[in-house]
Length: 263
Image (cartoon, rainbow, N blue to C red; front, side):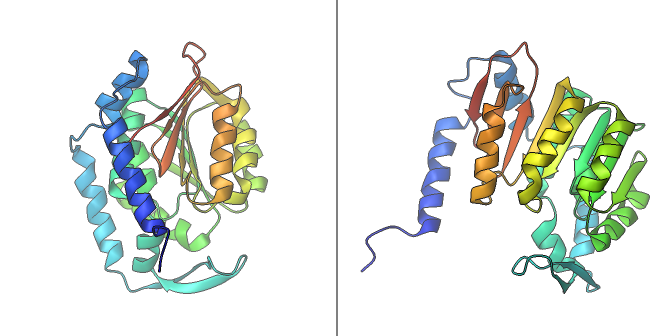
């Protein structure tokens, strides 16, 4: 006889509580955070580029081409899978892609750094709000970078600088080239072991108005620990926990506070 509820049941109950407790920004006294929740995070408007990007996703989901990608069961090894399967597992979900677009659109980000582009759909969401942006996208899996490059050539509104290789080797030079970063996207679902290093390396280059989005903050024990470190960091002022992703601000004019938002 089972005495404790299943993990899936506990997760559903947790999400239901979060939805009831945090559904409309209730209890948020900061005007900045309240406007962010009601006018950006909870916005349901469909922008012009969403259909184009999702049409590309549908094409990839129909692809039977095979590629080499990291084997999640065996660290450091690669396995062969179809492009369609990789998209289902690795690509940003549509609603979180839409959120990336709304965030860059809201804060008019001009210097964007993405670490872990996967197959490129998230990059298109990040950069589609305006042309003439500066965007550097790092990816360590050559097959993913190749597919992303094809999408960029077809649909990107701005030139996207794709760099392939080990992040610890590439990142210091890229940060010096960029000078400052006002939007940083960290793919925490695949870079769990290096997240603290990546955050620390990027921190000196983030402007006071910079936005950090970290994906997969609850995907593992290591990521949950990392998210707590970010929330406690003295340079961080406001954080928003969206369960599958986190948003971080560094503006010293904001009071330090950690918020939980149902999304």
